Image (cartoon, rainbow over all chains, first blue to last red; front, side, top):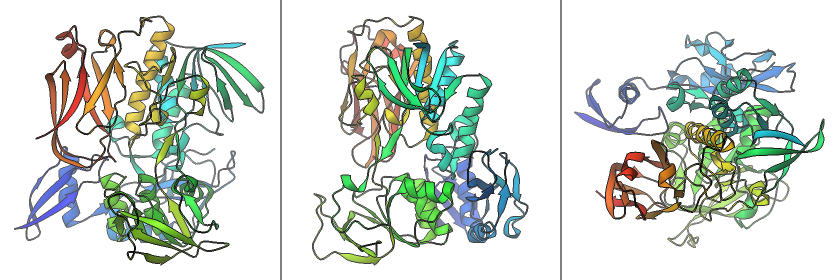
Length: 121
Length: 421
């Protein structure tokens, strides 16, 4: 049995998790105070993922904003973080942009779209 | 002179939530004054995720969280003025402000809600020796440049201070191609949230050096390097522990200070611990009818708690305007702290004016493990909550219930005590 101690990153509570593994199988997660914590513990030792946030160049905004903030619509494998950011490097969009607008359809082959997190008219 | 029942100073997360809650309490004469060109405050540049899990049960970015509250204010047709700088608040609640369309103007307020937020401690407050070249930024300035203006402040970065903004910027600049060499923290513990150490530093292999500080900055035109050294238990650098890091940028994430210049013009009493107003259970300051909430009151880790606190200030301001809160404040009792907490917000309570539940928030002065947080009324323990770990970087709370005080009608001493478990 392998035991791994993690800090849950789902919310700012930062619960200390203890994940017990038997080979690649997760036997138990303890220390969490909510179901998200258990899921994070399970995932973090098998397939760690993160939501990536960044901003891309914006053109023609009424209020003069030069960028619009974006995020991956769901979490992506941790190893793909830099690829996703790289895929956003030369992206430029025109205002208006609304929260949830798709900025890049399939970010770095993750199958996850990158969406706007801000409204700029 | 213009008259509004409630004037709110600041259109960030605190001001927006206060306005919305005051409206829900039945108040219609509300004015928000905001100095920036848009509502939302600092959330607009906090493009990372992790906001709103408590309030909305989903993980939002800063701009998304702000939009939820801006939408409420717009839907409720609450008035706000942008690009408007408040110059003065009088003890009689006359607010003097200026902007480019109205010039200088005054507003008579039935109640004022202070929601100005905080600002970053700067290099000048730290007495770091060395040159004063370009390339030294507060973490929040770097955040604005990268996230909103589209500029990279530098390529090789050292960060002093492990506040949350510094940690967030360590990740952000790494993702944008910079090399973040080290984060140095003066204290023996991090000033930021644990989750940010994990997802911003550990994920990217950025070292965090506790009990270290910057002892020299090199470079005449632009930063060329900094020297950091370990400090002893009195925070004095230990000779022989110096390490040199070549870099072109030094970010400072060394604490936030409530921005209370306006509060002072109104004669509001400030706490020496929080640098924010001392408030009672209504979140009312020492000046009747002037309320405070959010980071101007005490610096929060979580915007969710700011929204909650601000909503309470909004409701109470509306009740004050309607004359529903008895004016007599002579029965207010201080909340004493023992065994760890450095302060509480609120810091006084009139038991007769308590709502059904009152959340009292505080921070401890050092890292503590396996403790009980207890509430004592006249020496009798009425509440005990276990904490596995408490740290200065994480705000704590205790929920007081009206029923506890009803069982002690003549209470004279209220104490929050932290005890070993």
